[in-house]
Amino acid sequence: MSQSQLIAFCGGGSGGHLVPALAIAEQLLGSNPSMRFLFLTSDRPIDHHIIATCGLPAESFEHIVLPVRSSAARVSFAIRSFRSALKCRRCFRQLKPSVVVGLGGFASMAGVIAARLSGLPIVLLEQNTIPGRANRWLRRIATRTFTGWPLEPSWGDKWRTPLTEVGVPLRRSFQSDRISSTSGVTTATAPVRLVVLGGSLGAKRLNSIVLDALIKSGFRSEELQIVHQAGHGDVDRVRQAYDRAEISAEVVAFADDMHGLLSSASLVISRCGAVALAEIAACGKASILFPLSVSADDHQFHNAEHFGARGAAVVVHESEEDAATRLSQHLADLLSPDDSVAASNVAPPTSASVGHRLVVMADSARELAPGNAAAVIATSLLQFTDIHTFSSVRMK
Image (tube, rainbow, N blue to C red; front, side, top):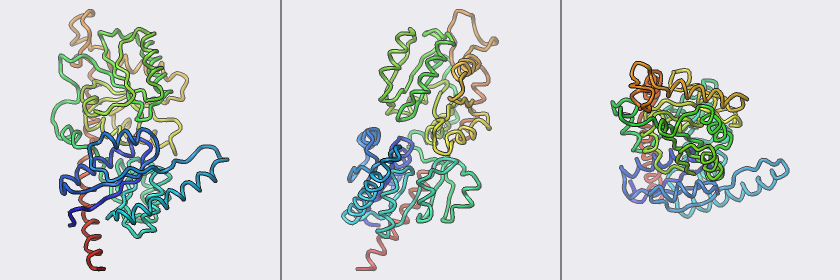
């Protein structure tokens, strides 16, 4: 294999699209330390932040436009998308990647189409149970597609090109948790720790529901440690709301060390992106899940149902008027001390004294943890680079 092979990753717009790429890149570097990577992403700040802090040898950082919601601007979007595809094709001609990996989402389309025009092999990653619209359109030109959570059977029958279920690729820190025999609940002396994840872009509706529920629940600061990822656009409002309610909480815009954050959790409240759920499962954590009500084809609901049906999570619909009340009830049920182990009404609960149901949910989550999908995909990509190298030599 060539010592300077380049693999292009196309997609972005959220951490859920980029994290699998970083996990695969880590695996590839383990096989070939001189491997190089090209990231073609959206122009959202979250993409720049993730790539800039990932510590991987990125050859370039290019932006791909995302669609706009206004119907009046569709023509403009189509023109900009065409320009993005030409930009990607020029980039491929100059840097000569061996294979192009589409990460899902509209930000992947320009790069994948350019790969098709350039005659390059195309690998698609689809993490959700319901495939995204971009991957549905691109599946006909893909060389191979790797799926994360089990794809709805009706879509598997329609795919036409080779489809392989491998699980959601996670970074190496989560792999060590997956094989650990340690219980999903933290140590006996640790305080109960609630982690709230609104996704890499934040979630204003979820943030508000959580705040209302915590106020209704009446937990005291000494009873519950809260870490709340609120998103860059809502972090100030959420922090001020906690202050007004006199609730002690650590509020952050984005969590760079997701493994460390989840490992310390007793319970997680989260959106239902495929990667977020895989990370929760790998750490063996019970969760209360809020599917994004406006997610394409309601795919977050289907992801959440996969967990709820197996007893690993409680699912709450954010569109319901009593969502905050229901969350408050679930928090009380899951986090209140068991009468059999609580020393007194005065002592604050610890992770060892919370309800048995929380332990059962954590164990169920761990059973859903994916295998080392990144290693499987990396092996396949290395085969593509070998073929590309052989073809290039033969043509000379």
